[in-house]
Length: 197
Image (cartoon, rainbow, N blue to C red; front, side, top):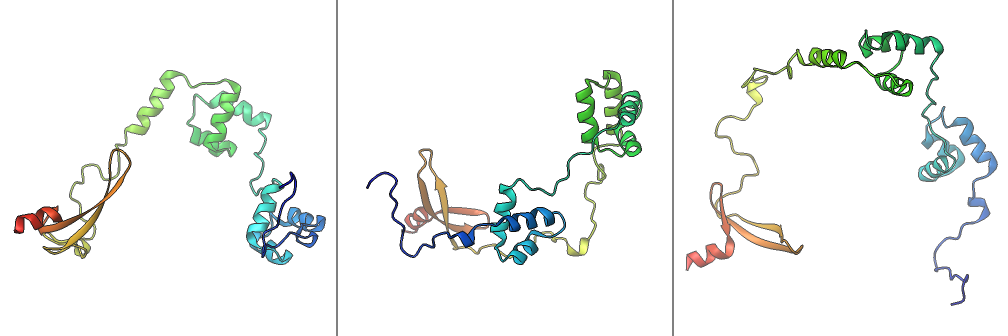
């Protein structure tokens, strides 16, 4: 077949100009993608949701807003207090998240002194490891708990046969038959047959 010649498969729909996104469609998406749900935009334009998603990705549109720039006042407050106040307190005052402050401190080349870092870590750990520490055997809803000796609904009976899948070291998959001879005791089915004779 000569280079550059392609044969279209029968029954396959060929894209036409009417399937292409018009400039008006793209403008509508740009104007509304932050205000409307994508499925509503797709319905309004008579397109499928996946087609709208592809177009949004293709044009680099996202609902994530650009990060709010730091003011000089916020930077000065952070510089003055990063080693005196916990990040949570600073974040509450200047309305910034922990990650944003950590990124700005790194950008400014500021690090917490070792003694302050150690003190804050100890402060976090002094409350223990969890709310249930020392509460072994606590029962919140004893009426709905499994009783001692309870057997689950999917427990199989003696004589039940199961097929197990096993992957060997060389990557082959083998299926073997097992039979239950008593509670929690299974043997190869072929071995059990041999024992019977």
